[in-house]
Length: 114
Image (cartoon, rainbow, N blue to C red; front, side, top):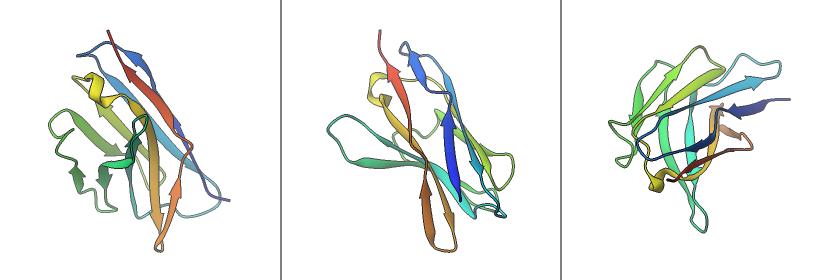
């Protein structure tokens, strides 16, 4: 059974940084593309960033220049988030795609507040 587990969320002041991690478990060869989505209270889930199997990255305009997505292997990714602001407050969900099937983690809370 494939599972995605996020870690690294928490509370931080505006201008601060956090690093999210996502690790997949299960007996499988890994994901093709991986990335992050986020959902703020009362809002829909929005795409944040994606990294392909070849290592190419793409970002939502709202996080470009502040967030960096990296990948250890086909099962582990990281999201370095710098210069956080209150609009970044949300539950962050890790996502992985394999043979046109999407897998999701349970989410980790990020709160940016003074």
